[in-house]
Image (cartoon, rainbow, N blue to C red; front, side):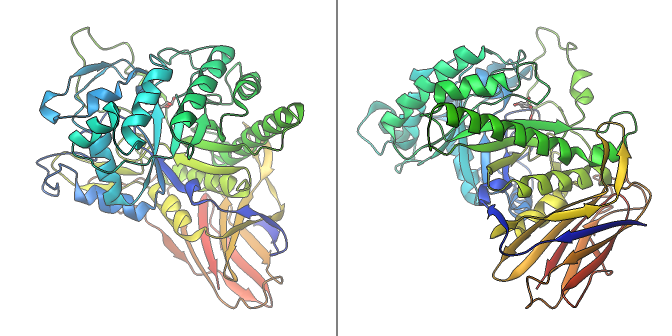
Length: 501
Ligand code: AHR
């Protein structure tokens, strides 16, 4: 039996949990928007073409902000194509995903959809093929009440009130050679600073996110962040992080421990932010927006690259439709633990993505929508993790991994609100249960514990169209609270949420 002991106390907080930590991401990619959230003619679709069954699942998932419309897509996107009468909208080549973009969904339609799901818009501007002018035009269109060409165009297009979008991303992954219009850190930093300054002249309420590295393995990682922040320090509020994980060469324990990589990623970017702050002798706060994170089996895209003909730009092709397993869900749960443990510096994050494309929600055209395994840890955490994140002191046995060496067998995060405690635990041991004890003597009023988790005899079990409830949250009846000490046994390859009240 693996053992772990945790201590937490209300006097030792990490910081308040920003609800934007539980954001999502919708990109015009594959069957995400078209034949995903928008499918006119589907039995559940309203007159607006949006599937109501998908809307209900998105609400259940509990995503707070939603980043839109990309992703790589945004670096070639012309927002003007997506406004005005739908039938007059142009069809364009989407260079990012080698598809045809019909523009039947644009800013107005997507905002209407967000109103239905109850989430906040986080809008990205195109800094790949475009620049200051087009970003300011879009902001004028979205946020100026009336009396200018762009704002009156919005009103003529049926939206009297401004959209009032406050959170904006200054491009996407501009360090990536795959990105249309990618730049050096110097070039991008200068451009982002100019765009941010111009946008703030239009609207002083904005929260702006500058692009960090596409991932921690980029050759420019670190110097990119430093250079970009040197240029934009006075202009932005956030720098982004992106990370995707997958199991390599049968190293299941290493895959489950992906949160240790996310921890190191965040710590490195925090160190760079603090370095630039010190050099600038500034007391300004810049946080991390971890606005793309998930499990993603990249091979399922690479296999398709280069196979398209010049006249073959499909509309809404099946791309990146990863089917997730129990192990993937346990890893997603571990990544959420990492985000919670950095709640003082990571105050915005987006699970990438939402529907059909590396997504917690899947759909079939004309058919059902269902929850993937990864849906469950996200939904449970978004619902339960409120108030303040607590520092967790962890004393645990270790498990060997090929990727990260020996790592703690158990990962943990804790939150507290109104005197109650929520625990989030992951057992990375692939064969052995873990017995966990938690010192809760700092919370003398607590008396009961309820545990729910994801595990299975087969760590590669998945939900499918034909068996959508193969993997669902299960009650863990081993949780007990006695004399201020909680004990629980975690099955191998498991993620568990415990509510202590
Ligand atoms: O989420 C899929 C893609 O991953 C996004 O378009 C891009 O930003 C990242 O590389």
